[in-house]
Length: 203
Image 1 (tube, rainbow, N blue to C red):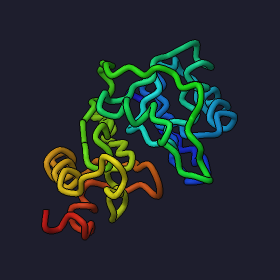
Image 2 (cartoon, rainbow, N blue to C red):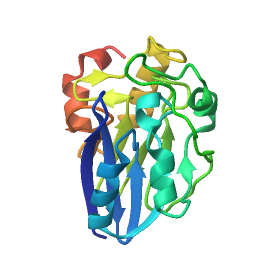
Image 3 (tube, helix red, strand yellow):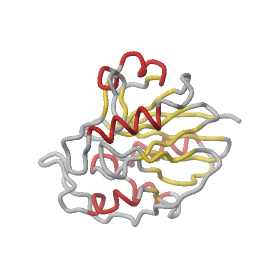
């Protein structure tokens, strides 16, 4: 099956928003800001939009979710239930750069697709998830795993031990040739992180 992946860097914190087209199905991952940049790219890529997928509820990853969902006639916005409180919190902000998001769309915590698997990976936040597309194979890791680094755990809901466990027990068992597309920064691969990620060497 043909898979196409497009990366759009959005917002002042440079979040990687991903457009993933599997066959004719289109998924928008972490539309954190700039819907006017996301939507033309989505329309150019084509396909039938199925869902907005949020890796977690932090403000920089959710800002354009409603605008994108509305553009596609109300497609569902998925967010793990453990991050719903964070998503709606008025303190979910990075002041003075990112105020809380207003007029949020109600997310769903249930979405089933044959195209990908949802892997719950708490640590950066309680409701962090990664989306694994086995046909590629590719993992969209949000702020859980970066190239030679890991997500912050000094924010509310963060837990470094939980983060290490999520990565070593849930992500590292994936195939070594899995491409990892993180929430910020460049892509990497599972095999590379097993060898070069200093935060995980003694996990």
